[in-house]
Amino acid sequence: MSDPRIIKVDLDEATILRRNADIEQERRVAIFDLIEDNFFKPLRDMGDGYAGPYHLSISVADGRLILDIRRPDNAPHEMLILSLGRFRRVVKDYFAICDSYYQAIRKASAAEIETIDMARRGVHNEAAELLMERLEGKVEVDFATARRLFTLICVLHIKS
Image 1: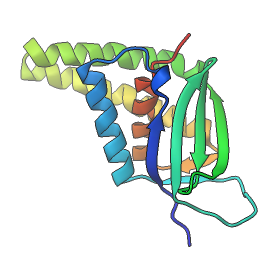
Image 2 (image 1 turned 90 degrees about the vertical axis):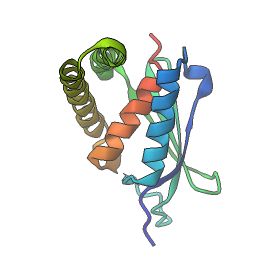
Image 3 (image 1 turned 60 degrees about the vertical axis):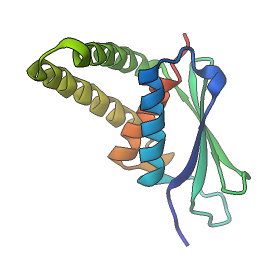
């Protein structure tokens, strides 16, 4: 029986460079939303017909994103390693717009907040599309899942 979804997510806590309340909230919400509703289907045939669900551990090491995909019993399914080079600009843009957004929430008008939020969503959407492109042929994800995964990648603060 096929169940192509993530049921558990772990982030490499050692990878997270700094924490503040906004980042912690983003992490909690992204993980909760991801677990509640996602589509995640590794495409490599592992020979035994297993088709989910999955436990996903996400980390960053040496400029690479590591997606350790496991089965619910913690048995390894596969590990994907993606270069983060193509994500650097969009992550930097996303952090900058998020900083502006959090500052605006505290002191800007509703119209200013809405404008910044639209820009933030646009950058987030661009990043989700890039992630889907990088996962092509490896893992099939829907757009909402890609957006939530990108949020988690940002939480890990890409190390240079």
